[in-house]
Length: 260
Length: 260
Image (cartoon, rainbow over all chains, first blue to last red; front, side, top):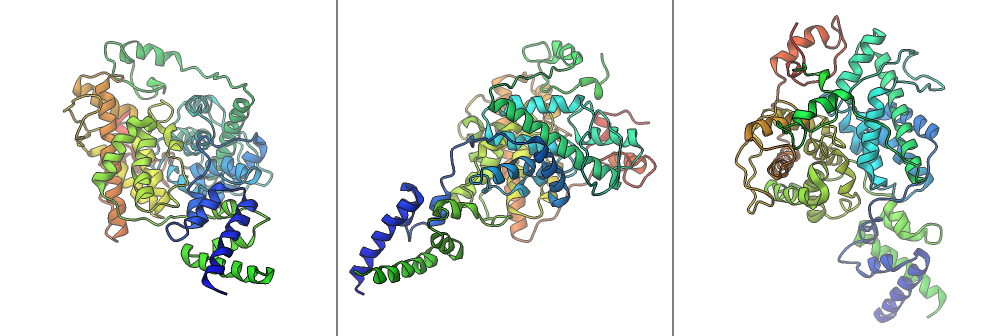
């Protein structure tokens, strides 16, 4: 076969490939062989953010989150995987593009620092991937978390321990949430029971995030959480445009500060 | 040209394409034409986590973070973009796959709740994408943050305001960090000066994250941060395996709790 014949064949294949794969983007990718790869070009163009959401089954999300916690993804990566993994299974691409492990740094309130609960971190990243209203939904999720008895999720087969105790954190912080549960249950922060509790927490928080996303997708989301009265009272001086004007946040001030 | 000649050409092209694009995955993608698309197949298989890192210029990271803050990515999305955007420019695929906007929920300490500083959140997600040692690097970044005068970064052209004041947060929390700076500078939490301060903070934190990643890539990373003595003293009772055994975290306890 001559070189020119081979060139004609290559063009024809590109044309055929375009038919099979729906495309201009892939056709362009193949045409660029030698400058950039087919894979590179195709993959360079995931859908624009936000990615399209499909209503999820909160129970399936909860179960996936519980499993993911024990599958080396812990609280933050596990919560992200609970939602994005379900979307990967139900929708496929583009939810195949992001490794859920990327969110594991949120474990233990971020690298063990005890700040934001990892389940709130991972769930919120998943929320942020699929809707422009991520600030409202994430804030609602956090507010709900601070006032809810956790963990309510019951696995069909507990992986680490049988536990019954629930507690209400009153805070978005891992450190406070864990300590509240340890005090209520009598189990230590490094116990298998606390680990079981956090896995169930991941299931419950992720499922509630999916419920909020489902409501939003149906045009039925309404924020219901309201900051504790004390926050408003403190912000009368410390809030934006007030005399002190030096505080950002929605956490209950009196959890850490004395009133004055 | 006969059909058989065309088939031979097709195989040769696949072989050639394999050389250009490094491979098996793309070859397999093209061979599966008709069942799934090339674009779909290629995009379904981004490299396994962690993604390969290329040493970055911290100054370029800082500048990109500063710009991103004002380009609708704020603190958390901006810090993620500072690092991942540089990798997108320097490496390309697969850093083209994740929309940095996904990390914007971290703004204002996560949806305005004032918990973990968004720059620590976004930078840590980027760290987690490129190395298995994300817990050590993220923890070191947070520890450094709590003890460092911020913001030290000076943009060539300030976008919002001229500011000079720096402060040391003593905390990983947005709310504490912002208030410390507001108290030191006299500017309000909603002022353009505070916004300028947080943009510069994003630049500085992202650049330090890149420095840690560069050290790690060179086999030279060593954690240098040590928890304040008070943390150890409190954990003598409250830490793992101790009498109370109910506390997770590395934050300075006395920022919120009275000693007892």
